Length: 53
Figure 1 (cartoon, rainbow, N blue to C red):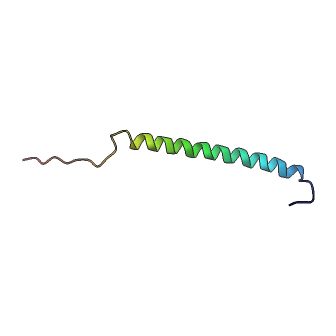
Figure 2: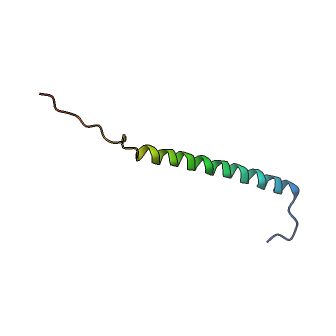
């Protein structure tokens, strides 16, 4: 627990860090969502080889 009041610079850094963290979290959610859609699409899987006579 701090006995002194936070400096104005720390408040600005917190706001900037919070913004960067939110952007990073949104980016991760988008990539995760795209991955789930691609994997569950049915086109994803091991290719089957047909035997030719």
